Length: 318
Image (cartoon, rainbow, N blue to C red; front, side):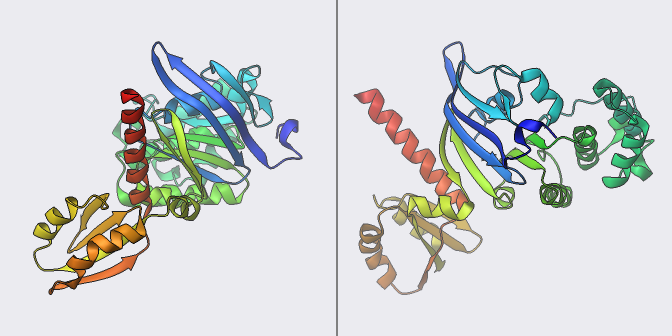
């Protein structure tokens, strides 16, 4: 373990990070604190700045401005050491498809110059359930098995921080669940995990979340804290001819979102009093059942996207 963090539970502590690619301001004033043993989820649409942020944290990209530490090391001056102490799993499968699982892991172990590399490889094969398939070619593996191989490679050098960039894209639901069970087991051992994802069920399995859009971190905290911070109101509606009802609801200025979930509509707005007043005539009609429910993360993230879009439109018109 790096001596710089031995007495502290803060693993990532950065502020004011900015990164430009030409005229594209990819990351804007990122401030983030992640503690030991936390699973921190980065959410946001494609192109929002998640990957760029992760690469700055692990020393693969130098920020244009800002400061901070990763594993107690300076993210600008100590990039070489950070890269040796972090496990980074990219979006794309980046191993040699004409080598077996065991051969891939042995090659990675040699790249790290690890002592007892053969023993570490066999331990990783055992720990992640890869032993029986160790002699299969990587190119013949399913998405879930490729994911296990990539995670095993990340863990060979015993990092205290894992940075995982869309690790479950294209993986079936069972493999995704197994992967997240493994992440929680790692977190219980004190390993910190920063993971980007598009999946709401995965977001809810994180200890803390950050939602990033157009390079700016709009909200962060636990799932409950993020939902509570936006003070949204959501109603669940069941009844007859929900399609026609949805059309009527979308015409109300106080209704931000109307979404169908099977035979139920979820209706969401930001102003409780005005929304209740606008919905009152519809609630009085026969054939419908209305129930107040807690808004979900998806409702919150769509609200944040709408609010950010409105701010950009206002700024452009000014």
